[in-house]
Length: 150
Image 1 (cartoon, rainbow, N blue to C red):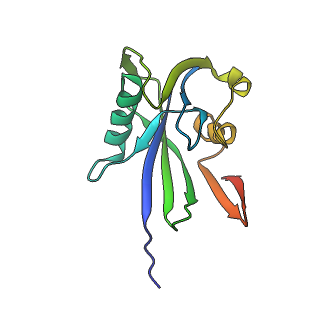
Image 2 (cartoon, rainbow, N blue to C red):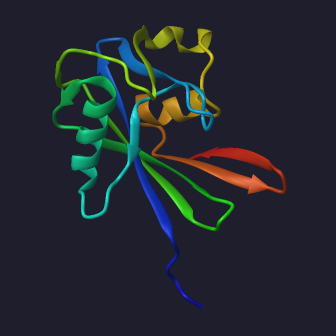
């Protein structure tokens, strides 16, 4: 039995300034609602290079010193492991803009519950915003997804 498996690797980043967080009102059909910007890691690209590139493409901001703060993972229907590396930073420059992925908004993190968020995002936010958890795991139980925080 092989110990290797196919994997898809992506990144998300929480850009913050004090109690304000930069969120994206994502319009794509998969994972719609308020979330953090991010995307796929390209072949031969470092994870840090990917998060810097993705944040620039989706927000117009150039981030510096992104810190890895956790992971999210689940198995796809094609039996691939979908891995999301979670980063955060408060170091950025540039002019904020939205992209075809969705509108970018600065919101107070304490008001997050008042927005329509992407599935599981409030739990995922706990990994970004606290040191209590380092992993968000979507586990499939028959036809339901169960969220586990570790």
